[in-house]
Image 1 (cartoon, rainbow, N blue to C red):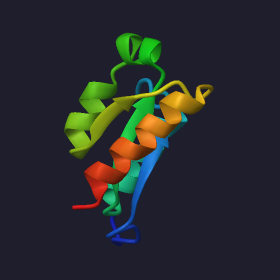
Image 2 (cartoon, rainbow, N blue to C red):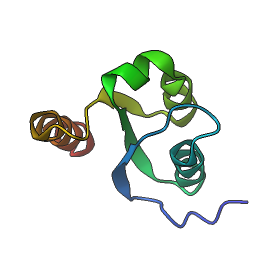
Image 3 (cartoon, rainbow, N blue to C red):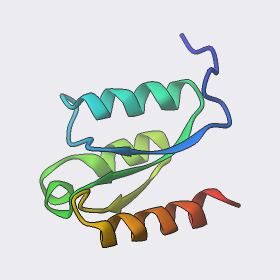
Length: 86
């Protein structure tokens, strides 16, 4: 059941790898509640996981970023802002 609690909210969800990931479940619930978000994970995890399937299901964009790299995070935030501020 959805109450639209996150309608109009935007964000970035890090760390979804597959259906067993907590971040995956968070993304599913956020989508059900009306949130818009970008999915991100480390480039190696993008190759190993199933994130593109979640992105398709939720209508989200996937942007790879290593959360331990300031440069990657800056690029992610810039891309997220460009994507979400329309």
